[in-house]
Length: 190
Image (cartoon, rainbow, N blue to C red):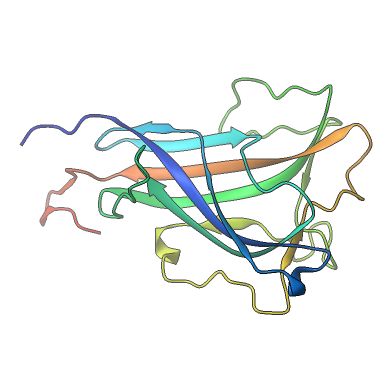
């Protein structure tokens, strides 16, 4: 059996959105956002942090969230080939004069006066019931839709500190299981 070549993959984030000011009167918009590409080969593990990823901008209500690993042609990669251990996206404010170091230790995230992590806007602020958006293979059948008349408010410009911009951090942890063999059973199937 020939070894499979490394491939460049993307994480597709599929969202349902509405404008926060009057979302009841407007139809939901569905949009797909893609991560920067990450390379994988059989047996490899990707654990990547992507700062300032493309994600909805503006004052919106997020109604649902889904993530799939896809190839360059937007074909979904089956879970038994690439196992999406987890992914999550976190909102942050970055000072316009602050630069994120090009290389960070996986366990070390930026912090300091020029970098502020934020969760959802709304009634639960700070560390109280904050909302991160995270998914993995184990959650593939878990509904992520927020029931009407609710939505997760994002992008409210009022709390963004002067001199800062709202941005999004995406973390992807994926395992390429193509050709993996369980020594006791045979070919691994997830």
